[in-house]
Picture 1: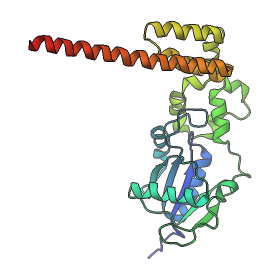
Picture 2: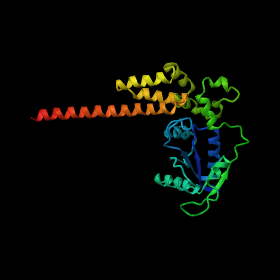
Picture 3: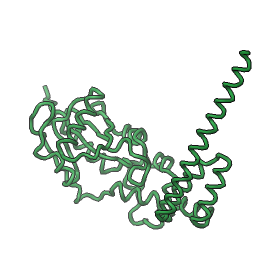
Picture 4: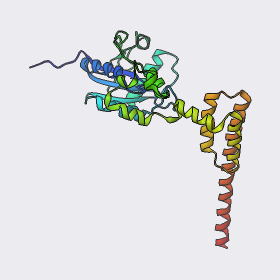
Length: 272
């Protein structure tokens, strides 16, 4: 009978996968071939939408799901600002236990710096030293998630990056999903549209103040914050933006309280 036992029990892969790249799949396929089970940990699972985290965790799982086998678990890991390697590893184990997953006996990484997080560390469960597998990616023609996100945000990326275009470095079946779900507010075109719409910061602030008068601020504030990111407001202007948001929340709360009072008055009148 053929011996199907793997070299490792459970290998953990910690990644952002923003989005899933061919490099991530290369790492996963190696881990799957070497271990009985693979845990894919999606780091930063509660981070707000940004250029670092443009896809929510559910979308990241959706992108990776078609490429894994039944010996794989996908686990969300929120960032905690760990001050030590030990704290971070304990956090990973806690996240695994919460979903009743198989605890990792080792980790694999394609980045030597990331590998250092797990070197010389022990399993919080067994006290045994964790196995570390480093898969060097420097000699492989791949594209980082950072570069792919940069191209996704760029206007006319196919022309700008025709010699190395992002679509060639992600799974073909994921291309349309990535295009459909990359946040439009992170693109250069959105920045151009906002500047054309508002003209400058002063106009943006005035528009927001006008919206406040009609209690119709959420959309305007969202656009204003985006404009702030691109045009760089001064400290005083940022303070003014915060005041606008605070004023809006206060006005909305007051309006809700007034409506509540009106309802109470009507009920009391009916009970007379």
